[in-house]
Image 1 (cartoon, rainbow, N blue to C red):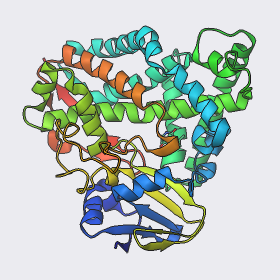
Image 2 (cartoon, rainbow, N blue to C red):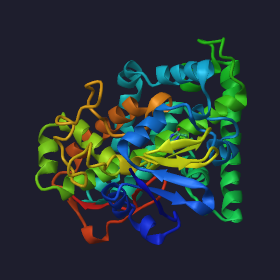
Image 3 (tube, rainbow, N blue to C red):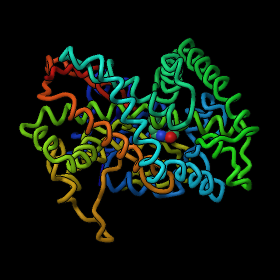
Length: 402
Ligand code: 2IO
């Protein structure tokens, strides 16, 4: 039986590191409640897993969190046939054969081009010198959007992401985010219209539905879907990459092991997603009175699935605070005999549709980094700091290499 404990998401200790709060949650079997905001923060693996799979917990919070900056509904707000058809269409665009033939060479080129200026210097900040540009360039490449002014696009993306992931935006900051959203929408809208007139062999033309005329999406829906993909593919990518390198450098012998056996990159990525999930929270609204681990929760309350906490549940992940490359092999089995996976990609019908793609993407990039930056070391490891409550990642990752 778990008990309710108060938590303020504005608590500066929570912002500095949520991990001690997760540990207390598991040790004392807690559900956190933020009374002022009628919000419950749930972090037990089995609770989170069940919430994500249940239609009782709706994605209604996205109406206020995401829709204003997306300009229309995002995929996660949809259900039934509409959701299934649109999800399938996007997933087809991200399929493995496209990856091998089109996206992988593009990802390799972007990675290489961004690394080149640093190779002779022997130093790079993997977040600020590489990751930010990398993440947005790859996403623009997938969507077939122009890359000349990608730094502007990166800034607008940042404004949009802040609207969705920051809880304490001032009115002024909100206005800035909405302005960034306007800029992106006016960039993408004419492109959608032109692809509708003259389809090409690209992602947006595919969304315009020449292959799937029955879907008949409006321009604003397609634009919102592009913004959805821009955000979902960009935000977590550089964070995950930098945190993986950080973990490999912090765990004695781990980097060498992976550099010498590249099949282990996949394990390193999965373990990074578990230990330091780039998306920490998934919001839901409960559509009827429910009980979670014995606690009554009223209809209409917000539930934040703390996937970052669920991924450190000691009942599922022994010694959860440790980075272990072999963890996946030894995973705990669930009821159906299936290995219990981390919940960093969410779960249920809205589980990340880019999960497989993102792993292939980061695998391709990590391979090039390992080939190009030999003998990597962390500079000033004591200054390493992660930030963010909703999406979380390192502020910088200063490396030296040969
Ligand atoms: C637009 C939060 C980076 C998604 C999103 C609010 C919907 C959905 C997610 C992820 C990651 C982003 N939610 N991707 O949590 O598309």
